[in-house]
Image (cartoon, rainbow, N blue to C red; front, top):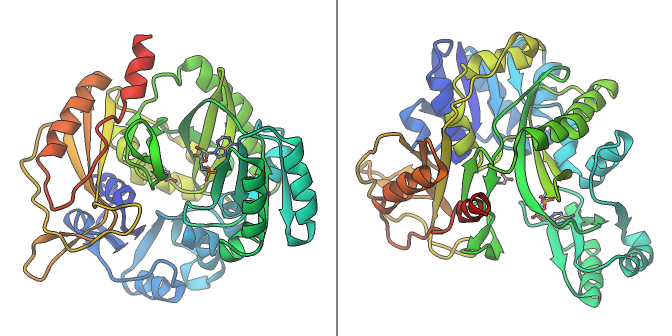
Length: 429
Ligand code: AMP
Ligand code: GLY
């Protein structure tokens, strides 16, 4: 079948690579894609948020399956558009309905959902400009650090964690006064959870589910988890501390109640759920839901999936995921992200990339890359390219991934040299 994948980052390159390996895929289109996806399929110049353009392309090119990478088209209701347009009704869609996507699109909605279904998460309350005084009073009852979250999508920047009470109150006032536009018209204030974070991924048809491999992401720009937040500077899968015991708690206390909640509330959901978790002394708490795969978690999770992903996606869309099993490569995947100098602040684009030599069991995924007029490979974003190595052990996977990363060059390239080091220390202790 012909498949259209929406998105253009490293996540999409990793997903596209797996789709292209499937016997069930005849033609793969990626919109808008990057220089990497162009090697496993055909890039098309379409804005994933322009539903009319997507619709026209799907009909003109006999696309039978739509796979949605990023959250924005989902939150804007692309799955509903397909379900409600007669000519598109038979196209299989991997991605939740607009209501399902609210789990990511509104923190307040997600927290209320978790409360209704008794899913462990930080205590919280939500405030608006009209209840600013109550918000300040609520902050008085909490202990530092204070966690403030813009309710809506804020490009990953809407969460503030503040040690000082007066500054936290000032942030609350600024957010409610429109610091993040409409996204912070409501602000969730929640209890601080202290522990180690990990990401758990679920593929669900809204009724049945498969637990995909877990991963750990490295969010800060600086080594030792310092400096500004980024989209993610590397990832490791599986997470060594997410052992059988811990994952049983995750399934029983979080995954099953989440799927049951979606079903009981008749929320149409055929797609991924990315659960950001905090391991607090051996007990999992939900930090957030996302309604898509993570980036760069996908770059270490997808290479480990041995099952035919198109078959998984078909059954996800059709509601028959109970017919599928998941086969996973037992090796460890280590992904190292390389970024443009200056990222996540301002940075330049258009630098020429030299890719270096291929290495066994190391994949190179493109994030922000494009081809110049003469076909040369150019940087085209903050996160530029990443290497994912698969090996029997974490130290080996890290060594192979870093060895490959050092051979990729461009002017201003930066990467963290400590991806996975925290996990290695935990394993030794
Ligand atoms: P979110 O966008 O909700 O994932 O938040 C961004 C980051 O802020 C998370 O990845 C955590 O590192 C941190 N964070 C969010 N909520 C909490 C919390 N309640 N306690 C501690 N850290 C948090
Ligand atoms: N790596 C975190 C995210 O994709 O949101």
